[in-house]
Image (cartoon, rainbow, N blue to C red; front, side, top):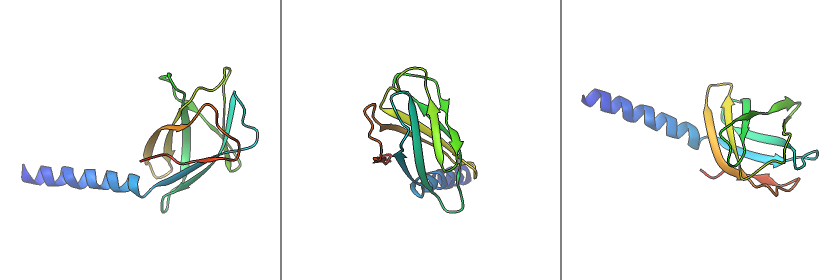
Length: 117
């Protein structure tokens, strides 16, 4: 019983430590408009990089995948994007992060948004 508690605490500490050692900045790039979001994402986690990025708009249950184009990530919508927007990242190393309410509906091209932890 004691050993399982110690193991559970170690796993929790590793998960929390992984999130705390990850830094993310999302910069809205030229080409973004009411129906398209183009981001330059600075993902900093030692020895890791982004594999997938998804967007969930305000009021939606659906995650929409971004497409990687060079060093930019892009998502298009048939309707105007609705913020605040939530993001889900999957890294090549298997780390999953979800950041809620990061970018508002009235985003500004050139502005960098940093998720709160």
